Image 1 (tube, rainbow, N blue to C red):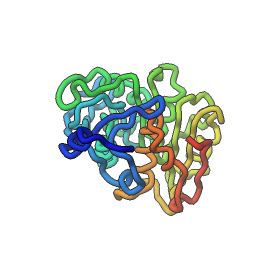
Image 2 (tube, rainbow, N blue to C red):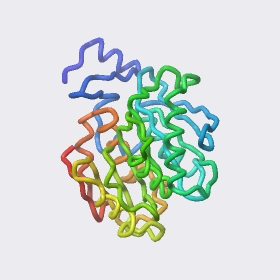
Image 3 (cartoon, rainbow, N blue to C red):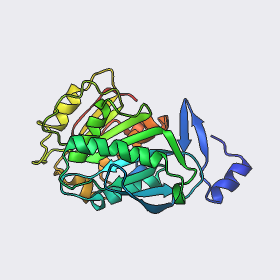
Image 4 (cartoon, rainbow, N blue to C red):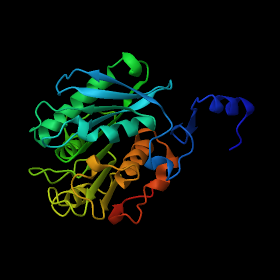
Length: 278
């Protein structure tokens, strides 16, 4: 696409333009696989929020003016938000307002984490202070989480109180013992697991959950070859779960079809399934 002189001037000044893509928005420059495997083009600021139905959180907001999809990100059993801080902040650098949360108790089970994710989204949607002021698009909401937080993420999709504005869900090594079927999930859902996970083995968790979701729902399953249960915490910049998480939210919360190309898997996945193309 040819860029006008004015457009070049704005880009050189560090202003990231939002353009229309089909029925969505293109926020930021054209992505490459290399660019979405590391921090994105947006500088971000942080602020803390008190819990209101959850244990409190940290909000990461792009410094660039605009309206952004909002993401609530839940950690796993016995963990705090520090365990997902790298991935949470990285998401924000790609053009989202992200809240990593602490749960009321680090021992909370997936159903409680689902309720807390919804509460966190409601708190984030109403936030109009600090760096997040004026940047919230409450009509585009996303949930994601690790382990029991991943189980809670999937439970949000079948919760009777799930927001109508829920656009995407991403479970990272999701663990759910009592609920194995997510046949009622109508939210575009990505599930990423690890082949060496002994806490939530994919054969008992990720793969079962994916298979239970209707073929009428946009869905994706990626099992990272050799990854343990804790891959979201280890999280090197080029870890494939991070780029899939970014691309999934871009595609379904922003409606940005430029990211569809990154939802086809790569050689780092020992198993990859989807109902794409997206």
